[in-house]
Image 1 (cartoon, chains in turn brown, purple):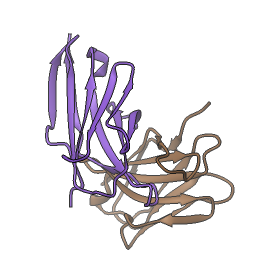
Image 2: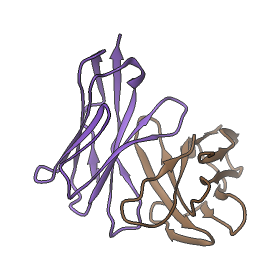
Image 3: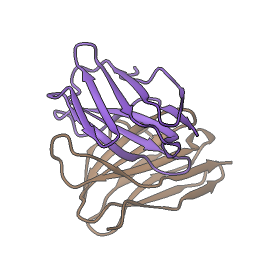
Image 4: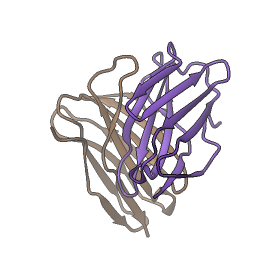
Length: 115
Length: 113
């Protein structure tokens, strides 16, 4: 049973470019969470999505960041016009359902470096 | 506002001894907690969880204790093994919320052979 898949594992962008991060949840999971980890910090919640719906985007920066989870295909976290401060590890997690106290399972992460 | 705090950035223990990792929280709405282990360049791996209706949960070498009145939880690893060397994160969640987890800063555990 494949775990949460993320690609690319490493992404290098120049300032002003766009970054697209992909996440395929575990089989049977329909809930996706995105977290960001800045150097020397813990993981910070960004957004929670179900298929075709954004449920909670309270952790998303107001500008340049967007996320989607289409009916078919992976969840995408898009960062437009990247800046150096966007350099971080971005982790996706999935869970099977929105039940109370459901465990989230994480992917290996995408390490974004903005030059 | 740091709702979950892991005040010890690092911990070093000898193989075979007990490792105790601590975590404090401020949000009274948290009703479950999870511990994750993370190796460099990998994603967090789920270890163990505890509901706020319990004060202890055990799984093999790992035991989590929860003291609600003190808003404190701890992870005990007995006996510690060199393969346990990693960064450990505690996280809190609320069933009345959307399921998002609030993480501490992490504690780096080193188990010496």
